[in-house]
Length: 97
Image (cartoon, rainbow, N blue to C red; front, side):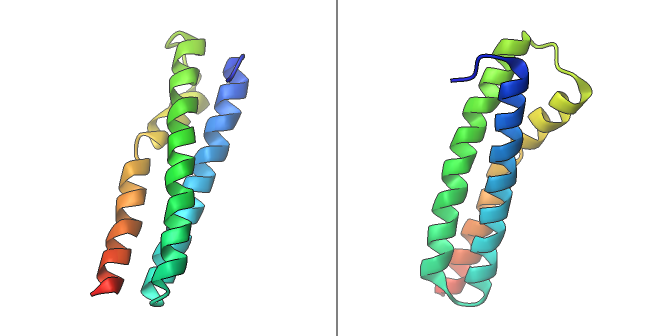
């Protein structure tokens, strides 16, 4: 999928941004009571998280573990995306009750 470290880093940045954006939109929609919209945004966020995981693995493999400071920061940030997803999921659960 990715051929170069910079390409994987750029992909990782894009997917992290998308995951956070759509998880935040899911949370906002859930808080407004728009559960259907919230679920759609959550599904997009989950897809972005999956893509971020792939970029995360590619970045590690391509860099052979020798990450720049920027790459390391994004690498660590990607590892927190499950928490972002869980926050949106909990907001949806709460909106359903």
